[in-house]
Length: 423
Image (cartoon, rainbow, N blue to C red; front, side, top):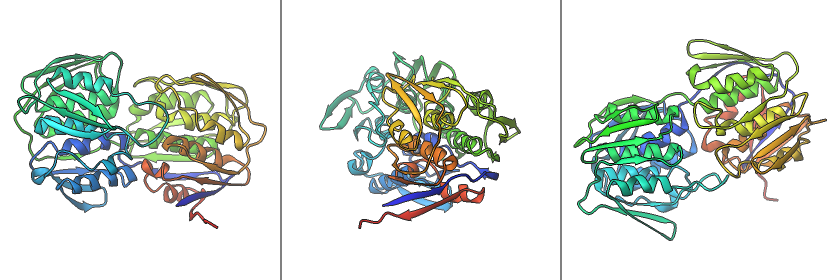
């Protein structure tokens, strides 16, 4: 067990490189199992969730070779089981992607219900709706989802999602890729990582058109082939470092990004008085004046991302006037508020809206991360608070941020990762 110890009040300056997108890797890695030939995937972030995926693959008989840091060759030609180890899978929120991948390739699958961060129910009803439309029979018992098909394959279908769902869109694409006939998906999520998964599948020979729009058409192919693919940069990691710069009154250049993916985050930071300069594949974030208020509603892409909501809440604790954040995606994503309030924040939550009053004084204190982005929010507050903050349960943070201590230290933060004493 480890914790972060952060001494606040240090201005961040310099350059930080963004890693590959965790959310894209969560869809692309299981998609690699749909190909019986070796595939090479690059820009894979070195984070806990990725290591879990690779452990799952090895347990399934998949050959995994690291070519160099961040680049792996995955050969699922020797895969020996379609029911991956449930112990590892229960630790992941993206475990359900194996349902689409295994159903697509083998016509059957057994997958544990999603685990990972606990900030509300992650319904899979839209996933099930899509697979049932394609001919699968779904049975859920004891936290395990079992899916079968009568003739060993899925069949093309017309699916209208009742709500926009990133996971459902990606999972249905996986299932339809090797299905017999054409599948049409409507009311699809348009998030960049959904597009990235589609691009990866197409690189292996899939026939997917319309990713990034509300209607996606997939014509099933008989098999997939080898490819080499590079995962897109992590827009949430980029946004988090932008907030780190803003809260410390710093001057950070964040490289290896796609600025278009950051438009909603950039707009809100500018609203708070932060200067953001967009370059070809980088953004420079500076702040010299007082932070101003902002009102935020999280929405599906291209709206403001829910995965940046906690970080922005922490930033707005230091604003000069009252702000509000309304959570439009998950029903219980304000669990971190009590920890920020322990540090001196003045946040009131009513239903899906948090009212953030200006904090008189934010001071370091022992706190705990309750999920991945909540942990990032505590780091935001700790970087600007007076004194020393100790953050425990950092295993959540390390699910999604590669070498966060090293990156922050390189730009002037006083942060260390130390073992928790059990005395």
